[in-house]
Image 1 (cartoon, rainbow, N blue to C red):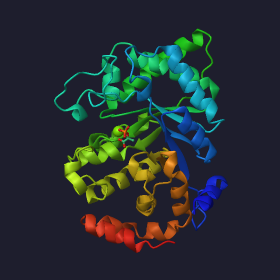
Image 2 (cartoon, rainbow, N blue to C red):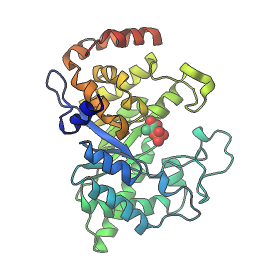
Image 3 (cartoon, helix red, strand yellow):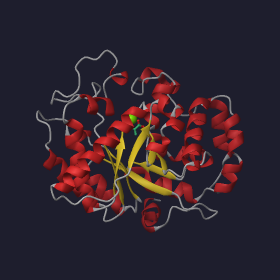
Image 4 (spheres, rainbow, N blue to C red):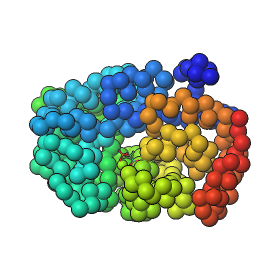
Length: 324
Ligand code: PEP
Ligand code: MG
């Protein structure tokens, strides 16, 4: 069984009816990047940069960040690499003094791109490092916790300014460094038609999207099955975001835990998803599941899935997708 999975490292992630699905890896260390490469990931779909800022007292400077990002790009040998700007907040114990202490509601507080924009120089330094790394291979920049169009426009203007500055200083930067937004705040999903023209790609963060949409703390075990992506509101919102992204020709992935859980693959395929980003540890299993799925059949059954009225009915739909 393990050996069979191992053999899938070199196989395409192709459905029974011949459609190629892209599997990207979530990573936050050198080891993750090496594993993603070995497993034949299409690239890195989510590189979390928080670890660079945790368990230390001083902020990483531009050069240190540049080297870390460049190494990810080089490690993936020409495959696409999506690096997320810092997603720090009072929910993560940083010692650098960046995040606020004792926020009453850290999940609703100054985190992600909000914190990056609020701290002098923090975003400039990270973007400069990222732009410099873009000279070494295909790199995309992803913003976490976006809730408004202004955040994207502000970062885009800053990127343009910094790229000009760096070029003038003699740095080699890619001609185009795509800028994308995480869709993990419900407001961003709902207001997407108003700013999709300002992003180059999207990535749905279901961990937070489910948390905020269902008003259910992602870390609160007392909530049990109340915290679940198997809710009609979640499915409908994911469907709408995917549909709009496709209509506007913007690449769209799901990068939350949901994408790495093979049980949910038929559902995400039915909703039109063709890019998954997941931890390397379940990548081959997901590839095997997708290779057993018939995409046309699943998509024909999407209306029934969207008619499901509750978790039980969604689970019943999933059970009925009996692919080997
Ligand atoms: C998410 O929210 O789904 C996500 C991928 O980001 P994180 O888990 O880092 O918040
Ligand atoms: Mg998130």
